[in-house]
Length: 108
Image (cartoon, rainbow, N blue to C red; front, side, top):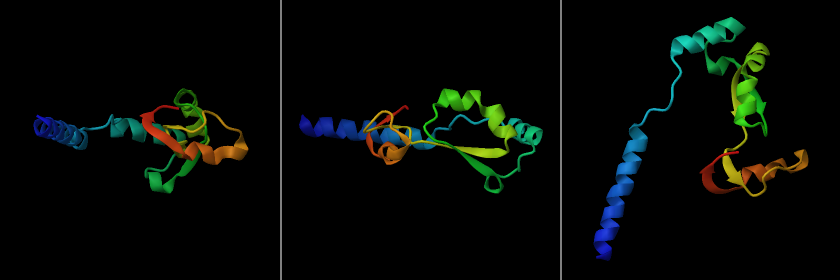
C-alpha cells in the first residue's frame, strides 16, 4: 500500500512540474509595451534601460506609481523578495532580514 501511495504522489508531482514548465505566464502584448515605452521615451530593450529598486514597496504601491516611475525614465522595476521573511517589516538598517525567507509562500 505504501509503495502505491508513493508512486501515486510521484505521478502527481511529475504532472504538476510538467504543467508548471509548460504554462505561460501572464504576458502583456508587445504592442502595448512598445506603446508605453514610446510614450515615456524609454529604450526598446530592457538591457538598455534603468532599473528602479522599489525596496519594501507593496505591489499595489508599485502599480499605482507606474506612470510616475516610467515618466522618471525607469525601464524596469526590481522588488524586495516576495517570500515571507523572518521579520515582517524592518528599519532601513536591517534590510538583510528581508533576504532570509522562511518558506516558499508568495506575498509581501
